[in-house]
Length: 401
Image 1 (cartoon, rainbow, N blue to C red):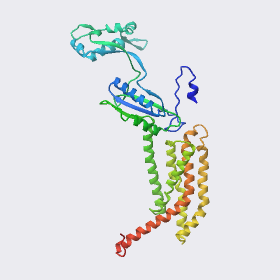
Image 2: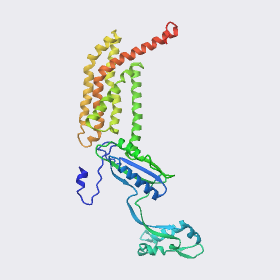
Image 3: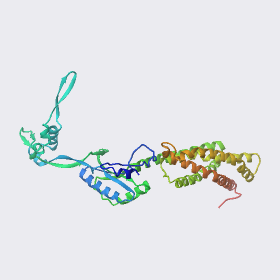
Image 4: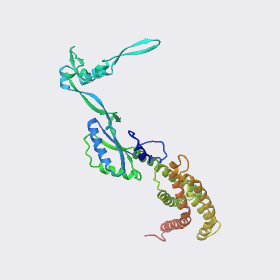
């Protein structure tokens, strides 16, 4: 809508973007797709950037493709002939220094007045600096004391140079950026762009890499993956210490993949993408969804310690713990519903996280009541068989093949 309305404004250049890194409501601006080309020669970088930009424009879903070397400004460039300069005992660096002094000037001294220092800069008059013919006649002093014009050792041309020369790790850089069209996935578009640039011939000493939101997403997801597994390990350690068993925590943690089903369904039904805030919701789910299984398994163990058989304890624990499990889950779900709807200012940015939590908690709550008792029985039977095999195998009474 913004692009359609801005198109009617004459002479206006409007860029509308939504940040897929943190969500639509994020204030951090970053181009979704950024391709960095590194090398030494600006002309070669500009040619490569044009080729990359042309290929990116043909990828479906990309729009507003730009190169950092496209928009330049006119500038006078002095091309020094090293051989001619050497005849007069001059080097290209000495020629450049003389031209810089003539155009930008050099501070000769300072004039103090009223407690202030005013720099006295010596340079050519303004009309001479604006005249290319006058600059070509600039006299250069040779080591022998002779004066030669600039035109004798070089040629001055009016060219269009880059607006700014960027460097990364002290290497010149050209950047091609692109936005995404509505409804396109950043990951899929990036894969298509990589495929289109796979056969691009790069000269020796030049490299190409992806940045922008792609790079930030990879770094952020790497950190969140580490946080996820740390959360899983901590939850397991706490439950192992609480139940004084290494087996029952595995039974309880089966509720995590059950929650993943609801998280995916929630994002699909709402049409939201799996971004960083959604991943944070997954990490939060690790500590939430196990609560229902803990309540159920703990009560089964209590009933078995009272003398009930395993099957009878499971059948009795389900109905008796159904009400507290539903109350615990529904209070959390209902508390997250306003956030999942994206109500309020900035609510849309946090909506994916709440959507993941609501969907994951709903499915894990109902599936836990069915899957966890079955897993409890199977895992305990497996542990009994392993202990039985180990004991009888050592005594020589029974040896498993």
